Amino acid sequence: MSTYEDRQPRNAAADRLLVVIGNGPSLRGFDFARLNGIDTLGMNAAYRHWDRIDWRPTHYACLDDVLIETHHAEILRLVEEGRIKSFFLSGRMLEFAPDLAGRENVRFIDAFVPHWFEVRGKAHGLSFTDSPCFSTSAPDYVTTGSYSVRYGAELGYDRIVLLGVDLAYTTLPEAAPAGDLRLVMTGTPATNPNYFFDDYQQMGDAFQVPNPDSHAQELHIAAFEAVRDDFHREHVPVRLVNANPHSRLNSEAILPFEDLDQVLGTPALGAVIVPLTPAEQDQVLDNLWLWTQPAFFPFLGALPHRRPDLVFVCNNANAAAFEPKVHAFLADEPRLRNCFDAIRFVTLDLAGDADLYRRENHGPRTSQGFRAGPNNVFFAALDAVRTHWGHSLYMETDCVPIRPDWLGQVNRHLQGAEPAWVTGSIYRGADALGPREKRHINGNALYATSDPDFQRFVDTVWRPRLAEIIAERPEVPFDCLIEALYESADARLGDADEGWKTLRNLSHKFRYSALIPNITSEDGTLHALANQVADILRESPESCIVHTRKLANFTDALRISGSRPCMGELLAIVREAADGMPPRVPAVKRGTGWTVNRVRQGLARRLPSQLKHFMD
Image (cartoon, rainbow, N blue to C red; front, side, top):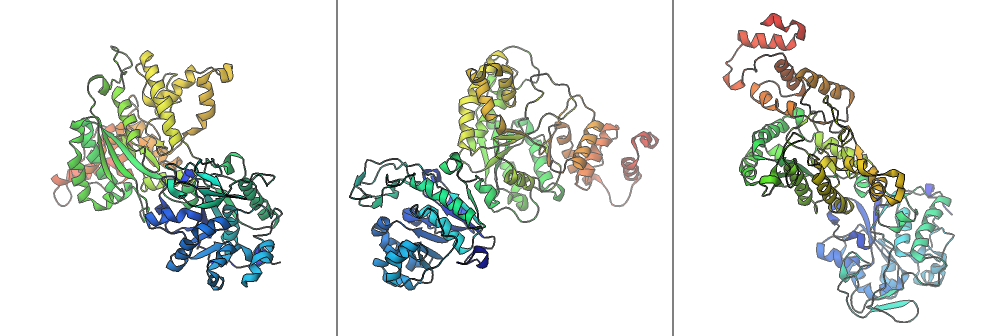
């Protein structure tokens, strides 16, 4: 028998990655376009869905003899249309289409499994292949899913990812026994909990009992355990992972889990959310101008094939009236516009107590607290992207990119990090904080908005518990909820304390990060601000955005100054303001050539602060 290392990969992708697609319900709503350009293997009756979306996998498998009886004509259609690269089938197919034995791109399990070669393959003129990929100590555990993995390894793929392999089956009332291990559908179910589309099984379809009692173990689970163990024993160097967190392959620790986006290296950032009030409209234009500059451009190099939406969530119609100006600006800046997919405006109708933002932690009580406006906008933003793909970056208008490729950096972080629900910064500014705020994650952060478990947490914990806490402490903002839960939880009671039980199970979903340092400060000086930003640039290369209103306020000064638009010049303008120097002469007012004032300003920017008074 040849070893795996003796063989050259056959038909393998350039990176030798294969995604094996099961048909479990976890795949409902999945966008198959995400797999374009990736080698895939699909199976069984999923072609019914593929036909609807005009999509085909790279490879196809069907090893169930009873399914072959039902679907042989459609499988032959897939072979003849020529869009699928290779087929891995049960030899039962040869009874319906014997000419397939001579097709180079059609292979049969009967050529790899000794029992089926002797029983059926030899009679059809197949040649036996003695492959370590099919060597097994559990020959009875044969399923299309598990043997598709073996077939992928035989083709030469060394990274195989399982998607939609749930391994949870529910008995359907429409599935009637038809002798031996055969079931027949007496009707097409209105809903089918076993598959990712409801009419996967239709009236008249025959199939085998999924987990027959004749096996000592549950068949489908045991089959994947056998693949894992056989590959280890035979030194088959395939990294096999499961990309479905709800699969029993994960819950029963059969295979390691990896997030699909991380495996594929696909962009994970689906939306950039900017909350907007009427008072912030000029700041938005300053920010958009800053993003057009090479030193602050969102992406460097080729744009990702999946780009985030840019979503403005407006507190009222007055804020939303700004929409035409944003579209006009982006129309004049096509390179920046191309960094985003859709540009969306979400308009709320907040007024009165619902739109309140009181910075002080005291004053007359209101129905929704002192920070009702930001709180309501935040939850509306989460609702606005609830069905959108990927994570969302929530960045208020006082967030300033400090490096080029800042959205690229966010994508790289998401692709390499352990999945989290909220990723943001602890407060890193100079102001004093009370004990109830000192550990909170600032709201300008990354949120796993497409994760249904996160959205369930928002609906059942974050919103209702924040409302309860605000009734007693009206100053609490949305981003201090977790800190408030810690304060109220009593770990000494263990499971008897529901708050502590929740935090114990979910705290790892809330992650500190250096991506977006929160350095906003009311008390710190401008020199201290410039020094801290310079320190972040020097010491924290992973930081790409800072949250500080004081720095954001100077983007307009940089814009009109005509100075080179880069981080060094922005910090220089901050330092000049700290030293009491007048604003730089706007570019539109400058004449050609040098002037005494321009020379004085240039010298002053370069002098140490203790010598600047000599320029007065």
